[in-house]
Image (cartoon, rainbow, N blue to C red; front, side, top):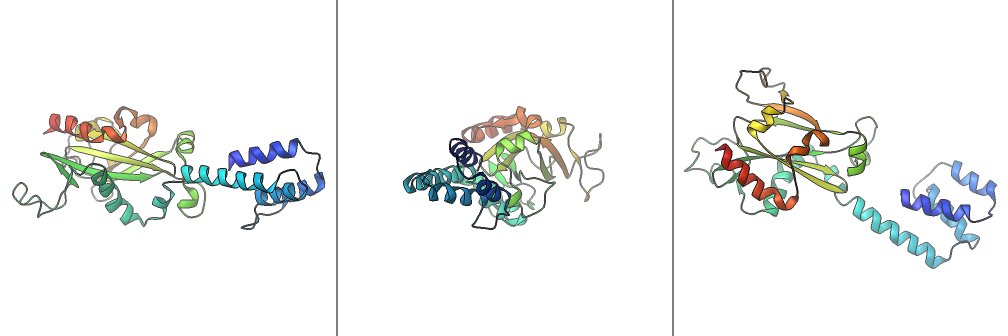
Length: 249
């Protein structure tokens, strides 16, 4: 939308139009599909400042930008349970089929008492996957309407929230940060998690995170800057899990 508004502003600046009409359009309430932008373009079209082909081109360019900038917006419409317990784990397995889903059946011979303590299994490495969506916490509306782009998340210092963390039950964590235009990945060991000093207690276990106590379940709030030491590209996830995991088991 920023690019489109800049295009419209430039066209208005280079055109000696009826300022009273332009001002009335800019002050009017936007009612879908009659937004301020659509009305201004209709005015520019009606007075011959742009041709119909140019109007169509502006629309096509806006659509392409919007598709790219909102390619992960659908994830903000997912129910919390579906997103938190299903999407992240499946996403990692789609990227790297080498990860085995941790179930009683799959781990019967290795972990006869397995009860869902971790999500994935990779050559003896126990892996837990968590995902968090970046969005405004100060505005109202649906989660999708409050979704941040990566640039916005950085600019506002958004803190990614990962909860129900069980470092005593897994070797490596894969954390996914979801912005509407980008996915971010962080890989860290259970020891690295505890060494961040960010692990706080969760309501189910008030002793979680207390020095000297066995950590069972906790949560963290961390900015992208704080998570930077653990950042990996999508292509590096598998090799980083294997490298860090082998040092942990």
